[in-house]
Length: 476
Image (cartoon, rainbow, N blue to C red; front, side, top):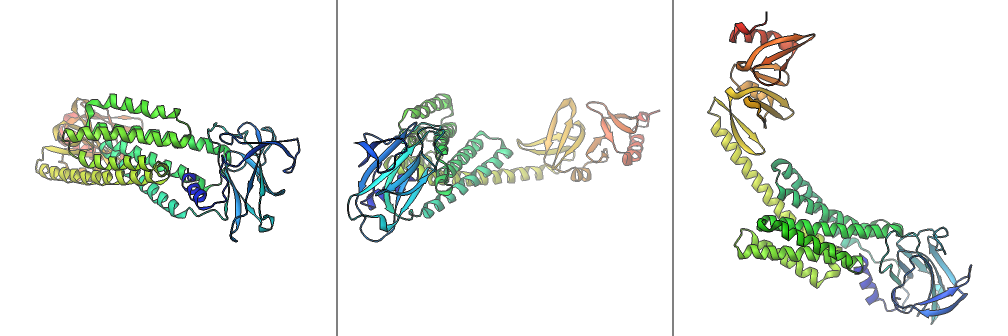
């Protein structure tokens, strides 16, 4: 899709450019013919389409003014071979009359023209093309056949912007993923998906400028770009309606899905992609507008930003999928990430305050989990089992809680009736009914729940503690 920018520059700045649908004739050639043995040439009607066949094309171009080096550029899903004034300039792959004869070439090819080959007037260009290996049939398979200055204009500034946007989007996706792991909220999951999808699309959009891929890849690349745009639109609508209008989530998302899928009927993948993005933006703007009418917090700013996004998409559609989409997506998602980070920090401060207030209550253990802060009476704790940086509290009644604390710290803070019986287990001696040996292993028998392992080096302390607590519980 970089052609929507680069070709506009070339076709308007270079008067000798040969457009894909203008000035070309389709000719017949006998088997094994050369560029000089063409007959029955007729003007091309519509687009140049070599898909599933071999084409011989001819056009006449005037010598460019000035002394700047020139090249013939062939951009499209085809292998090609090029002549100027009867002299062969080269081949991109190898065109043929069948799939077995053709060798697939690159999607973009440039054939530099020696200055000595130019005539003063009426220079004849001949192009042989074929396309038997394309996996996806395109409405406009040939994006351009043109004579323009050599080398190709640099795309570095636009690529730099695309890379910055893509990097920001992937960073946002990672940040939302971390937040989702901590809070398990659907909004963080949707925003992380939005960032990841937009970042992947930025990579696919930049692929042409980075990798000289073979033309069969191009069709699948376009399909991937359209699919990512469709997913972005549906996720955007899902986030907007969940945030501002949750009562209407199902019907609004269903309408968005139908509208986005309907874009598959549009001609050309550029149009499909632009329409998919515009459909999602338009529905999200409507949802934000309803939220403004209902005076929902944050709706005005969201409506203003999405409205600007939609206006740029409608006024400059050629720039949308090339650049502005990624910049707008990054500008939309990064502030939301910062808001989520600030909110998470405030929640952590509130949790710390709650833990501090609860520290003076020795009869309870204050549990910090992803769901908030909960008090667990010490008398209800059967055992505490370590799990990396977390511990699992096993409570009476079969309940279990995950607590953000380490076993070593809890061992120092808990009262004397809690004993470390294993490197990963602290047991409440008030919940113990005895212990038993099973071969080389010893198990602590609990009044409720699963038995607990006893380390060999802690067996003496366990026996002594049980005798002090309840001598009658000691085994015979």
